[in-house]
Image (cartoon, rainbow over the protein chains, first blue to last red):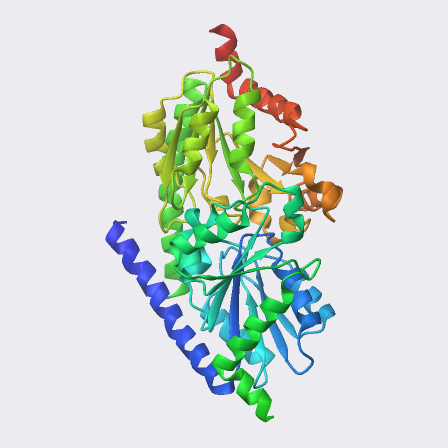
Length: 229
Length: 229
């Protein structure tokens, strides 16, 4: 198969995904739902961070979660135990969620106006960067155990993000990890990229992350709907 | 595009890769080179582990390294500084190494008989599992910061591996991570999977890992060639 044929096929797949993503985005905007696509390596602590976010969120903020994994429904179960409706998508051989899968999950979840929909993607710093799900923002989670060089080695992911959460900062005393360098590297890929240091374990930085979500809700119209409700 | 057409294309790509992998494998076997395909999430500590392996290896064991990353040649530079010839492959948008890339890199490296060729794949627990590079063994590195559930959530990778290295065990006192549970989960995916606990930082377990390599050399004929040299 020629290279040009391969590229054409890739464009077909991405084009089809983008059409589904546009439908999702219109639906989210029309209903005042803030959709956030959470992306990271496996094991960066996305699910634990979400559980803590659910526990610490304002009482009047409805939260829904779509969980993506190759296998198991363990994460959706953790989210439900933390107090939010959740749907698990198993991608099988697939390395990322796509907009079509998310559209179906949303039909089941039916997030109310003024809510936040977290989409926890398959743990993968490469492939999910190329697939728009219709979200308002991509948020990358980088754990301090992973090394400061990750933004340079996986630039597409950081270029696509509107926020990077530097997670597990409670472990910093036990590591040689330079948070400032990691953030500087991320900003070499995307100038001015917003960064927040958090620990889902100790709660450090969670107030800043919740404030960022609140601001994004306002921008997405989700805050306005809630305030009027 | 229909699903069956997509599957056919995927099979074309995998079929082509497998033909290149078979060529690589014959070459490795003919020359008594032990090729190991190292796989993990981004940030599991593969490169640090390799640097330590190079430093601690027997004096008479030649080592070569192929480094895969989306961008940067930082890892190949680290390996050369540690004392082994290395070639960096940048995959750009690509999420894994393929056998064709590895074949070209081997033409440049020209590993001698009785040597070990480490192929450090792109950090990704999903896609590289499907791509045979012609290696003798796939080795998965799982860091103790990543969670015990990873083998269940990314089963294809663990099913394809002949060894799992549980890395960064020096951090265990600061984490809630159950090593026995992680290994048990890996063995639910692949019965009898060999597991070694290591710390590239402290050197713990490195002797066991080097002994495993020595055994694999013997099985690959690489040990025999060296002993006769």
